[in-house]
Length: 359
Image 1 (cartoon, rainbow, N blue to C red):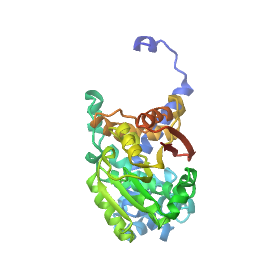
Image 2: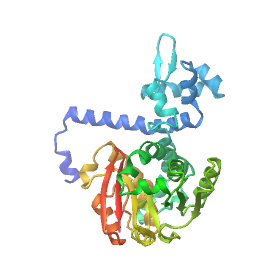
Image 3: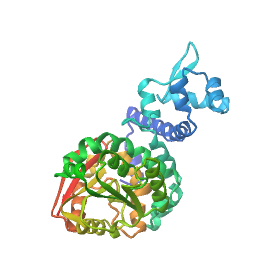
Image 4: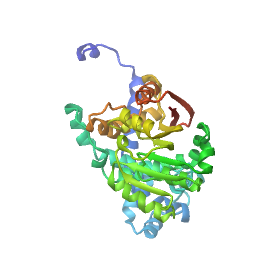
């Protein structure tokens, strides 16, 4: 429909006001995400959780911040439902649920790491906007460093909640092997959160994490040392399609296959280096098998992240750009093209699909 034709269409007053209300709500959410990041970064939420209720002056005093900024920040946070306000005392506090999600980093409900991801991805919007016209990509390592911190903090709670209790038991015979003593590769390991979770749970097994991002591998090595796991866990800078070794009992890909420049090459190398009865664990963001199945809050979030980060990284490597909302059919095609004979979804969460591939 042309612009001239659109002008002839009658506008429904209720519908347009409802739409404008939605847009204004999105304005507030977009602007507030930066303030949420500040709340996490400066420990404002943690201070409220530990010492609230607090006035703006009290919160500023406890955090070494300026009261005038804190006053405005608190109004924004209360308006968005992130903190609670008592009009009589004129003080703010967190509910137990808000505190759990925003401050307890060991909780499966911890969500605050996502604000690091959002902040970092939005830093790239100018470059990504240019890429819309040029078709060029942007490497993972070219993003703001908060992306790497945020990715670990955002995904780690889900791995903590499900990896040992649900995902590994859903694989064919893998849990028994890990308990006895197995050889595991974690491909695209990032900061090593998934690697270390497995290593802590299975003390008889040995693990190696691979990632092409040197800074992430350096971080992972320090994390392994601090956890006292360096004797059984190592990390190396290697591309997924070039991982060394052989006869792995388990090769894992956590939320990374869709980002890769050569997912078929990565799966081929995994197939070649697995033991004959080994399994590949492929964890991917939740997405529908049709476009319209992604028209929801999860699909909106993952498709945005994919536009700003996942798709550009693959395009930078001249890859197929599967993206974070890749369908199960698209993932299966790449896995089977890599040489695997079977590919099936073994379980899922609201945020992830968990697949097993076998030779």
